[in-house]
Image (cartoon, rainbow over all chains, first blue to last red; front, side, top):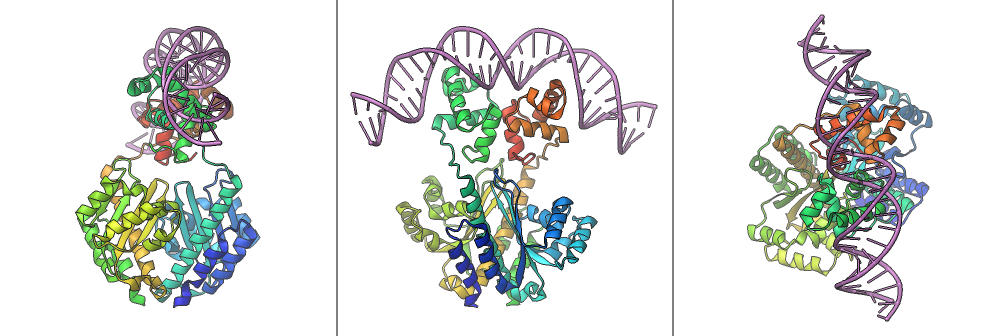
Length: 241
Length: 241
DNA sequence: CTGATCCCTGTAAAAAATGTCAGGTGCCAA
DNA sequence: TTGGCACCTGACATTTTTTACAGGGATCAG
């Protein structure tokens, strides 16, 4: 039983500092193999530079068909993943009434590629949603007694995601713009719907000064309007509205 | 071993439809007790109507001191929780060099209230961060062989959070404004920094029409400027920039 | 001390957003 | 078929934002 979590620790170790996709994938699959995993699919929507990052070793024909048909919008797996951060078995999601008959069709098609059931780990974050799905044929993995093994998969998936996320982030490598306190302050009031003149009253400044700070913030954030500036500042976590 | 996950299932069942805080807390503690948990602290920052929702059964003196001193900003536990979605043991986070000496002081103070070590489950979501921390005295819970028990705590915490989140959402009870597809579209372009005229070119409309849709969206969102409108739409998850 | 950074302010013109009037089309459900 | 809704457009006045010019004072690190 102690050995159950060795793969998690090992993967964590291996992935620290790795920025190569092949290497990450190989490490993940090597360690996940202990749990009956051979196929995986990973989706990361958190990076502006690559807003729909997909990597998978599913049969190419299936992966292409899935994307081309936009099954994301009807498949129970991504829908359930978007709904809740709790990992789940595919067939459990499929059994929920809220995911319609189309979902069943997707599953039926997947079965033609020998992908029948699996386990999905959603990772919700401020920047968006990531999904790690692994196909699992061995029905033993879904028995109550295998809960600890599923947890290991859960943690493996999380660490795999963290490594990918780091790598994707390192790719863009753009450091956060550094706003001054005043800039954050005026942006915050702007996000609350105040005009420059109003903010000047609130902060006891000349309207010109408020405009000055908003200008600087807008430039730093690469925005071309106050509206874009506040959105960027919010999504970057520089201000919270 | 099968019985290990009974508390998770039981809690999930019990919490469905429960909107009473006392009841939730009692159910969580009752089931978590099986894992040596008696103290818990829960923070939810995802609800605009209650942006810093804290509930805990920590000693009142400690909870008050923690908040008053703004330990959130230096304590390794919330900092680690904000950094990664992976659950962790407090002392593991404390051992990381990036969390400074102040963190040690917080821990030392906590020990005076008999809170010495524990386990924290971060839940990152689009709306923000939630943290479920449980104090655990029994060192056995941190042995490798107890990994499955920690997983049970992990899932218990997640389901507890989901129930709280539902309840908090139900509390505010304000239904999301319903934007039409066009309204979302023009807001999205506005969030990208486009002017009304530019959006008109992009969507092949009269500028007046774009203004019309933005106007309607702005009103529905209770905003007094485009900047506020896009921020509200983004934080409400109505558009993603 | 010098340069960097932040803070503060002015004038003025061009561009964009907001507010108020008034209308027309098409679709769907009651 | 009627009413509601989403969609679309025009003209006009007013306010706000953006952009450009130009400057002074405070603090702090190298």
